[in-house]
Image 1 (spheres, rainbow, N blue to C red):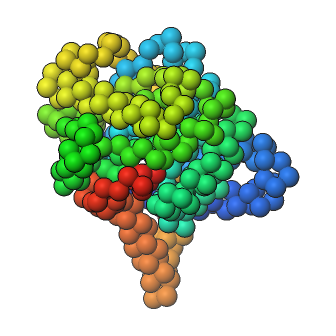
Image 2 (cartoon, one colour):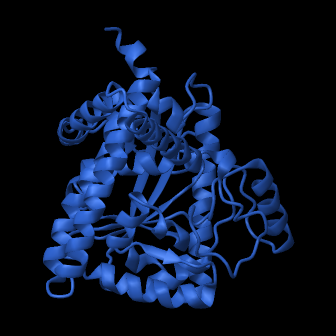
Length: 390
């Protein structure tokens, strides 16, 4: 069989959807049982078990990127820091939000660090009510926010203290831009920066500082470092970095720069902390400008050069995917085929409805990642509502 023909098959994509959403609901159910029955009595054990449940869910998407689409991830990380710190301590990841799949590239990197099961993030409160990922994130103690700074400040303080007591290393992700980059939002960001005498960024939105600042106090003494992260794709690459292209098995190359910044280097005063975050994005912007013009993060940015390297591909996401394909997809397809050939209208209708449901879930999930369907957050600049992520 032509592998490219298989990758472009809608039937294959539907099989991925059936496996992911069905296994996700099973994992949600297991999480709920342990959340209600174990967590109140032994939180540490619950978190260790939940690590594996989350890994089993997240690594299915990593498998699609790495083993199905053959994504190439180039890391610009100091090798000594990688061996000493990465995956061995709690980290506060500050990432740009310019692409549909930048978060997935982050998951790929975290899988290499052995912290994929403990990836956390700031997220919109409404997401926790969504089956599979939303429910899984709720059981995994994500920081869900309401876009009201006074309310969110208390939520952040409480959740950060909870997460910092985690028995294993976690990575907490913040997109300070608040939403994905679009030309319209960028223009609004420029106008706000000019009006308030703030740095004007060419390739990023002005970072919203309140969520960052609100998190720092609870992290002191518990989270050793900020991981300043920049993800970029070359604009002349023939394949755009989208979930749809990954699903069709189209290969992209991601360039990811991560610098470990000890939290002790971050100022204690709030105005200085805001300036610290803005300067991180000024540097990101210079690096992105250099990358777009020269294909190199460092040539014109003034940032110290770090040579890229590609981490080894780990087999565990593939084995996990095969397990769920055998456990879920094979019996599910067997039942659906029998329902279709049963000759009974009721069974035929049920089978058709199930397939349509999986297809709609797949389309909806992809749409959520698309830039054109991104949050309207950012359409107006309000520095008091600066804690939100996409």
